[in-house]
Length: 372
Figure 1 (cartoon, rainbow, N blue to C red):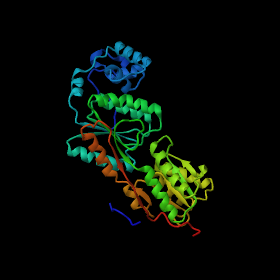
Figure 2: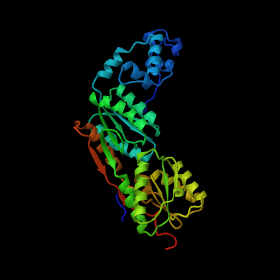
Figure 3: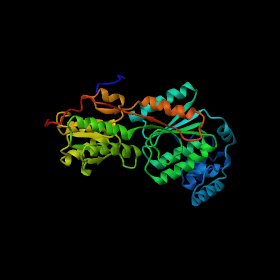
Figure 4: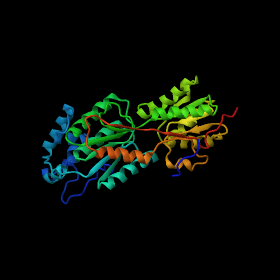
């Protein structure tokens, strides 16, 4: 295939603003006028989001946590700030954008598309990174609900975790019923919301078929955490296409690491340590592939004359690597624009799904295996 196209909400900082005469901590709080929700959360030893849920009555909270928050509020004589509540009830022009890691070029490119579309509609985007912590993701959604965000966007992979599904639905369902808008990017099992869904399984399968066509029969895969739906789909599609061709993918040739450059470096290093005979390595993201490329160089393994390497996503930098990276290209900024547009549209009776296909782009990191 020929080369194509030449050319990731504010972080929820829990900053404390100094108040003249205010106490330094809840133990020294001198009365309801100076006590903040943060003070109550600290006294009750719960998260700020949990304290907000209890005192605003926005969703159910475990009875023991509820009692601790109410007791702390009583002890501190906490009184809600009427001015802040009035602002919260006002029509918000803020959009909450929750991703896994904004420093990852994949999410940065998508966020660029989101913010461009939001700007065109006079909206402010608040950006948060969860670092793939499902509990933190739910907490951020709760915070955005408390702030009356106009819409909430989840642009990271969903989790293969029923407890996460229940917790997230408990936050999102009442938010939507109250008029909030939700749109997600990638497959989020169990969430009844509008979705922009990259065809990860199909893209990985197409990549496998093109690598088979080059003559490869011995493969290894560098994956991210198995709890992510993106990992399930990309690994599953790649493995299924190999199986259709009668080519096995042994379990010991699948190495898990974090979805990061360092995760790819560590996973590729482990593959070398195992004495892998793979002639082609598929990293489930381009960022992992960049780390793998560095690891192979560190161990004196030439790409592609000794081992071919492929990624997924087509983040901008991979075209400029030496050698340039074979990948499955997704329209990242366009996906951001589409998920933002879904959130701006009037709700429909049924959740909408917009599917995004990927395109295999063969570049210089892949070639025929050495023996051919």
